Length: 399
Image (cartoon, rainbow, N blue to C red; front, side, top):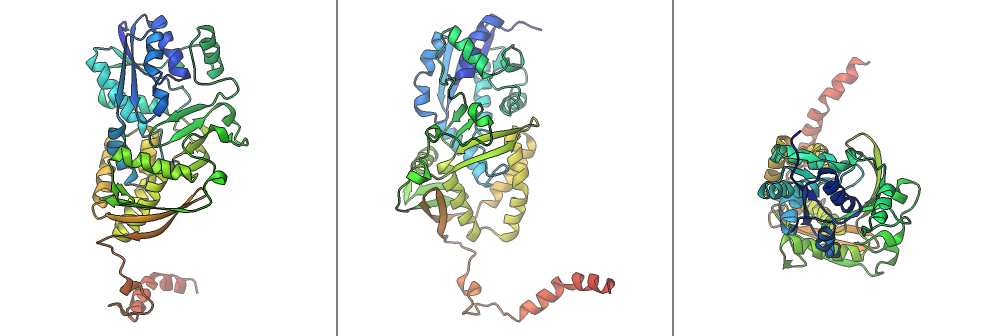
């Protein structure tokens, strides 16, 4: 196999990639470019450049992709109200194709031979990264250290980091893995591998405990245009700023926490704990506006396809033709979804208490029990008779 001269590593400054950077230089005798995508990790990014340079990176590329992340990846996904299994809003899943896309572009721009990632051989992220590389830059060699080296787990990496004096953001007492972006925070591994053990309260970052949330409800209005949120409480905001604001509001009231055991693409079950405060508000409000603007059959057709669409994202097929085809259908369905939802936030719950739209399909005159509204109740007799024809026919064959 042709020797590797330069590698672009998806670098976060976390335990895995901190160790990997040094390991790649030693094992492959190649230059390593550390690429870090700013998707809203906040203060976690502050030490990234210095850490990568100290570890021997020949170059460090940090790109602010927050607006692109929300506008071009999150919003298309949220138009579908996509969730995986027990309510996971796909916060990690949807971030990987963007990171991998830009990583491949950086690799080609830097004349690199290979790309590398810190995903383990047991997880979903290895698939998400590598399917993106396959779709966008198949000529690049892929290096996955977790599938090559002799380390067996994160404790081995902690030992290695301590031996080589590599600063790492975990400890032996709390060795769980976390992933943060503008949409969510996820936690897995370590102490969380026992599905019976309740997560520590001090683990959470984006939300406070519902028990400690304000005892006074807060109302928030979210305005949508063609399925995308565009304003909060009457203030129009760009995608990244809007999600930041909703994260603050939802997090203050303890909204958006879930603790689930999910089915990974590679075949095993995994326990994950997630915080998605702003995203939860966006989805609840979106469903409310859809309820009065989206045609019944269009909604049911879209909803029937959403589990498959969510699986595509979870499994790493964002850049696959089947996802793109489904996205076109979803986007077409969203053309009439323009309106405003009002949510009541209280102690971990976000309850829809109002919805309105200029082109609402909800007609109170038709729905009212007190007005005819152009609807003849007598017409229901024929409707029911035809709907029940096959049932009556079947019943006669049993007599």
